[in-house]
Length: 71
Image (cartoon, rainbow, N blue to C red; front, top):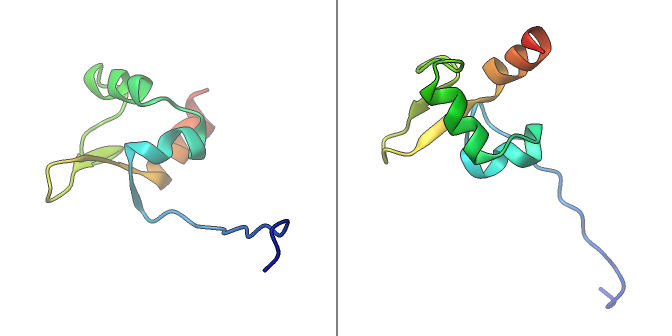
């Protein structure tokens, strides 16, 4: 591969994603996501939950639906 060639990878998210992907998927900052969680806009076990490592993860389908219906 030459120095000017570029490789592009297309990655599809799983059902649940970590907060680092929120800006790429929806343009939502991690601070905004925390606000939605703490204020009850996003519901635990529907929009978000904790994984076995005790990290907050987010449900792609539930947030997609929320964006489509609540804007």
